[in-house]
Image (cartoon, rainbow, N blue to C red; front, top):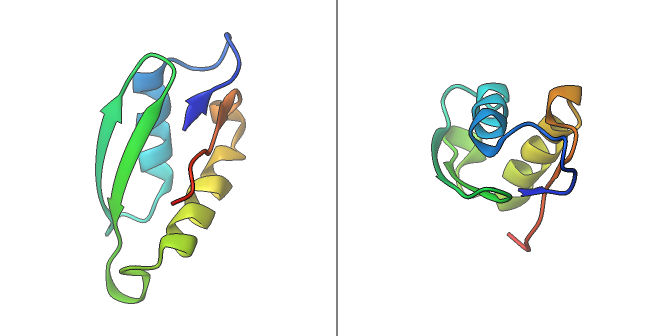
Length: 76
């Protein structure tokens, strides 16, 4: 994720909000920088290895107003 608005939530808060919106059974790790967050996700069951599905769930979470100013980036 990348911060694209100066008034967006700080990275540490944004990553907590994002991870809190993902399925509880997913294992998540993160690397936090000032304007960029890298979230490493390991799905389980039918989600395991489904990169497209993981990105879709993250994109869905980013539509939440509490994450305004953050966008999904990268190619997977």
